[in-house]
Image 1: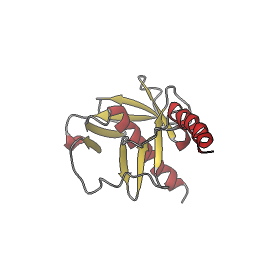
Image 2 (image 1 turned 180 degrees about the vertical axis):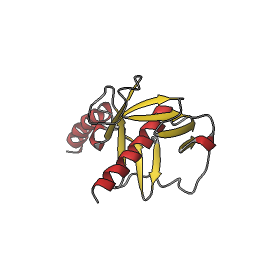
Image 3 (image 1 turned 90 degrees about the vertical axis):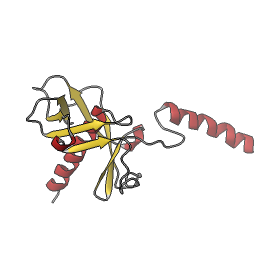
Image 4 (image 1 turned 180 degrees about the horizontal axis):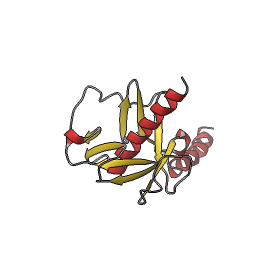
Length: 153
């Protein structure tokens, strides 16, 4: 009986891993937003907010400027900084997931990354765990979440 259970469980675990899940959760780019957190989605069942990127500033709905100093940034990611919020990125029911889509979808935020001033958000990233795209996706997702909450009031 135990062999039958094991034999039926192993293919399900492998299917979950192949579908984009993880056997052991690993740290993925995450930011704390009050009591909640926002995290880059790693599995298809996380029902994420989708964002995409474009090289055409005319098709973008959100502009994110990559800046060279912390003082100019609205959002900063630096590896190795120990903060009091280190445990605030655990997944809870308040966690919102963000997924970077391969193609532009009209109803989702479309991000244009540049170094030009006049952007909606400014980010500074010096990280091995976060890419500039991850940071931009999270900050836009957090801003989108705030705007959606304001609409529901």
